[in-house]
Length: 142
Ligand SMILES: [Zn+2]
Image 1 (cartoon, rainbow, N blue to C red):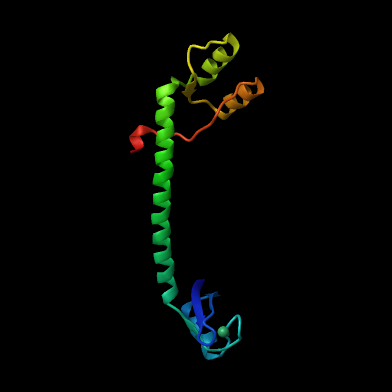
Image 2 (cartoon, rainbow, N blue to C red):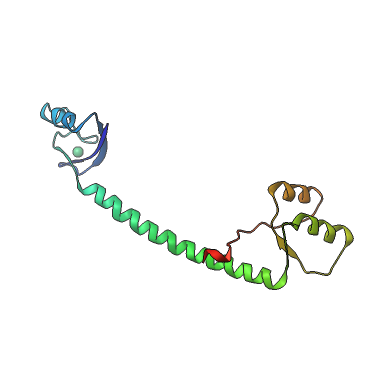
């Protein structure tokens, strides 16, 4: 199967059409079986312009996404800095530390951060311990 973008010379509609092969396209065209989807005109041509349009669009979208990602990354980095400066890192002991703060009313630290499984977070929530999930970027990813 081959997909062609076809353009109508009469109304400029561009539409996709599938053919078994490029020969089939030629055959259908000769027999006047190819017609415009919107005005039924037979002046339908294969277009080579469309793929290029798609490419340049994809490129600028990628650029945009990268810019967007960099912006989000910067926000996360700032957030991380704040947390690192104010909270105690407990690594994988997050659930344990969160419980000990909660149950022993330890006020030694303003807060803690670390990693926990979704299951841990669910259990903590059930026990009435508030946690916040934030996206985390490892420093080595710079
Ligand atoms: Zn048309």
